[in-house]
Figure 1 (tube, rainbow, N blue to C red):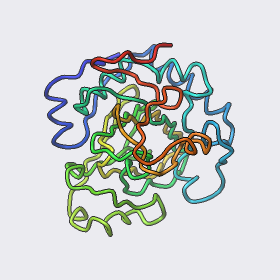
Figure 2 (figure 1 turned 90 degrees about the vertical axis):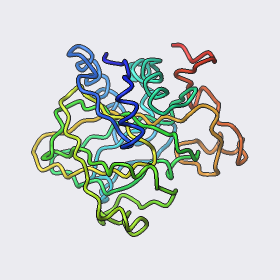
Figure 3 (figure 1 turned 45 degrees about the vertical axis):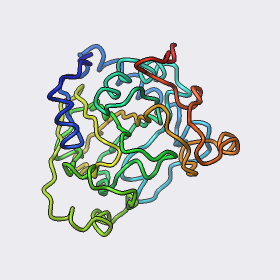
Figure 4 (figure 1 turned 135 degrees about the horizontal axis):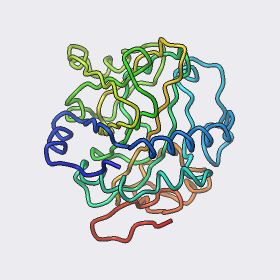
Amino acid sequence: MNNEIRADQIDHYNEQGFVVIDDFLDADELSLWRRDVDDAVAARQDRKVANSDTRSGDSYYDKVFTQRLNLWMDHDGMRQLMVDSRLGKMATELAGVDGIRIWHDQALIKEPWANPTGWHIDNPYWSFTSRNAISIWVALDDVTRDNGCLYFLPGTHKTATWDNAPISQDMGALFQQYPTWASQTAIAGPMKAGSCSFHNGLLAHGAGANMTPGRRRAMTCAYMPDGETFNGQANVLTPEYVATLAEGDVLDNDEQNPLLWHKTKTAVTL
């Protein structure tokens, strides 16, 4: 695994809000990730989220991608991949924080002829509010402009608030909230299989349609800086867990949000 973060990559991430890391996984690692992701997604069938009966359907959103969240919770192979201190250390260094917890993982698979992913920002969906939230996005197939690569609006993480837009048929709905962003030039992020990107939780990003008869598989994980607090939104938290929380409570439950890496604390071990 190419998991050493360089100073220039940190600088690029801070300035642009994202960074692409080529050849993140070697050939054997890529084969393992593909196998475990495929197996975990198939085992879920149409159930989207661990510990939930939410099902995928036939909506526009469901035709953007096959989305399966928190695979680490109910698949041993995915737990081995996601609860990896090397990933936590990379995210910690890029985000400039003391430690990182998993918020949620998610497989994002654009099926053949899948709809585009509208412009959006991530952190407003989540149960904590942070300018230092960060996500990894791992390409399991070659990702091109034809099959739905990511697009980034560089630097928007600096001016974003927590206003957002849903992923819908209106590709540019986000620009109603941030009209000055509409004149910016997006940067495409095609990647070879085994490469990855990291992006800030407040960076505007989207993805194109899959204009091919093949699948475009990606495995992602959103990370929460250690010490963040509950903002009142349930998101992927279970009703039982939410019932124990008040706004302002620290989200430090290792069964829900494992601590992957920290400068001074002991992280979760498998």
